[in-house]
Length: 224
Image 1 (cartoon, rainbow, N blue to C red):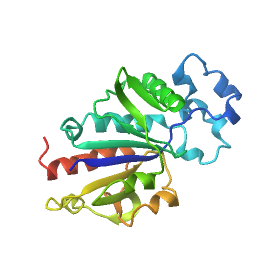
Image 2 (image 1 turned 60 degrees about the horizontal axis):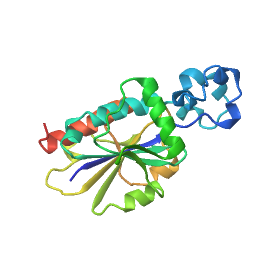
Image 3 (image 1 turned 120 degrees about the vertical axis):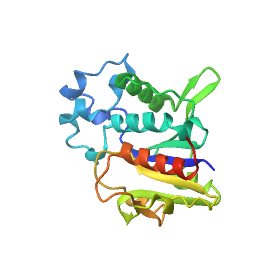
């Protein structure tokens, strides 16, 4: 069965109305350029000071790197990866495994801003990114015979990856990985599973966790 990865609480959003008139925002904002409409901590740090959850917001680069790694993996190329992006504002998007994410960061930001404005990205009749109705819990409940893991430093340390994906057990494995800069999952995310797992004694960047989980799954299932 394919592995499902959910990048949860990703810091991708359009620039909030309450800071759009701040000098550090206005100097980079061009209405005709979609990429300039995306909140980006590197450009809008001073304007974001009073935003709630500011440490998790304005980091589209994290989602960018995670998607590049996941979509470029052997697991995805073999048709054995399902990928979802969940935002801090509780929007959920399903990523077409054939999507070729732009390597250029500004082009990626333009894609995501367009997605947030119109809720989908299409190429002719081919839907590349689609909006998913409902909540994360609704999405998880749509799976049968599932094993849900929340990857967190607060979880039980598991250093033997064979314990994460027992080869002899046929289940829908779902890995929830944080797509934010720092901090912890909200209590709502932590409540989605009793299986809270840590894969390292060290704090790891989101894209490293994505790489490791995918690699572990590839090894267990002999995908090369």
